[in-house]
Image 1 (spheres, rainbow, N blue to C red):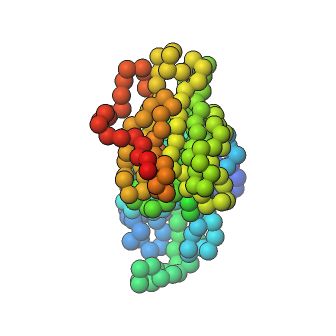
Image 2 (cartoon, one colour; image 1 turned 45 degrees about the vertical axis):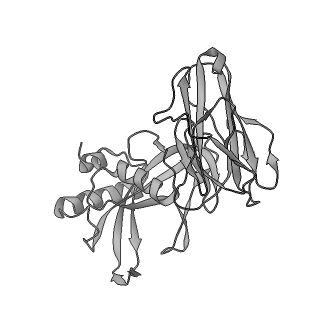
Image 3 (cartoon, rainbow, N blue to C red; image 1 turned 120 degrees about the horizontal axis):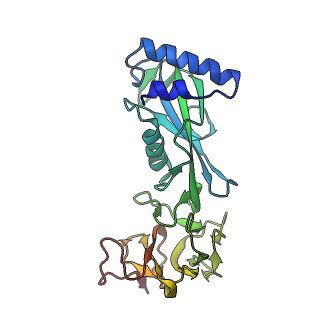
Length: 288
């Protein structure tokens, strides 16, 4: 299915979407370069409305041109697969690597006006953005300077190469058929080991600018290690980068060194399996 077919198949929910869809299709039929920002009249863009699994939070970024908070998004830049563009923008703008689309279809369509502005020393005249928006779902993690972002309990979350600290996290094990869950403890700056949280509860702090330094994770109920599963996890730590893998309640990260945790990789695996690239000689926790 081409992008034109997707837009043609989109079912408008209001008059605005119906008229904007018709405008997009007319423009796409008359301009072969509708995917390129070099078309200074109008071009395709995309955005991604990102929510946590409980649908109680949404992820926003600050837009310099509009001087306001908005959803994550960007230009198609020649790519007709707006889904992949939206997920790429989510990764690049927020560091969230585990967003999953809620359905494959376009969530909404609209035409946005963009005032003339200076971009990298060059004047860009006023033009239109034809926007196709998607929806993504993630599990929560709180990052310095970003706020609540997200991750899956089986994937990496946080950021690397941006010097941002993890301040709090929530972990859950979604879409699993067994009666069980996951619990986790964090070691926070100025506090030390905090009480355990479980199944999406908050671990860490909000609004206090306290870095996380280490974490312990374990499975509960029918997911517990004695029932055939293990949880493996590792921490990307300031100065050290990715440390070794810990599992089933062991410490991962640093203690007593004042080093921020920047990202965490969590994987639930059948008992006896280890993560790809596992090296038993690499320490999972570095202590003073």
